[in-house]
Length: 269
Image (cartoon, rainbow, N blue to C red; front, top):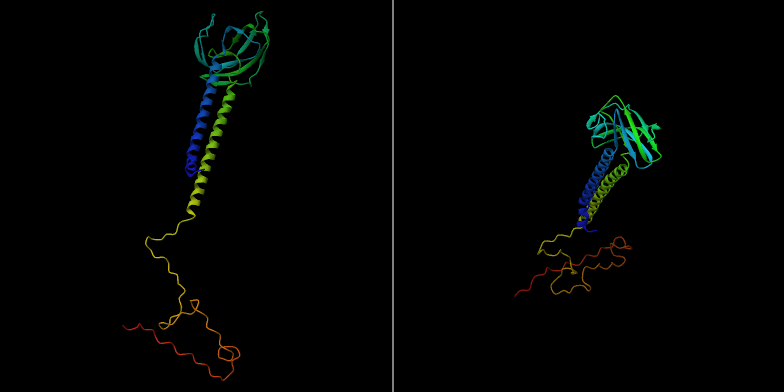
């Protein structure tokens, strides 16, 4: 990977994290909108009214006490329709009859799913099993006229999948973004260290090369040839019996060194 690509990894990581946050927000908003639309589609049954309900499919249905919301005008002579309400008493007495005026058994369930979306709040009261599609009558009685019974399916169905997707998108975006940022920083640090490990030797322009001694002979009088092979040579060892060598006797007079050569002078013109 090139250095320029590595330097862009932190920027890409930030973008990925922001995309994850945005996707999570969109999915969560869609989930809330779905719950609000499903709660709005529940069939209303105001207090102190007999409401006719037409079930097109058999199955299990839920009956809620909606404490906050609104209801439009309904057919019949119900006095508690066409209103906005914000009540609190969920102790409703609810009875259901089939088309033959036979009472349908309701099962109490106050621990089931509730909803709070789109300006509507409802708590579960009953479950009812509709064995055959047809028309039914729901009779609702209570002390708080600003509470409306609602009948239908669970508004939260399907919203849970969207909310789990929102959480997954948030976690994935943040983790992947953080990984890219850390990877970009580590590779950038490694590239800097590798570059700064070697530096070329500085030599100013025009500087003379460093001095290196050549194979020159010992100084001597003019015209004296240099020893063969050039350079300095080790003087020969003294023969046995001379001072300074093993085997020399006591009382022998040391041999005097030869006189030094005369200093060299340039030839006169």
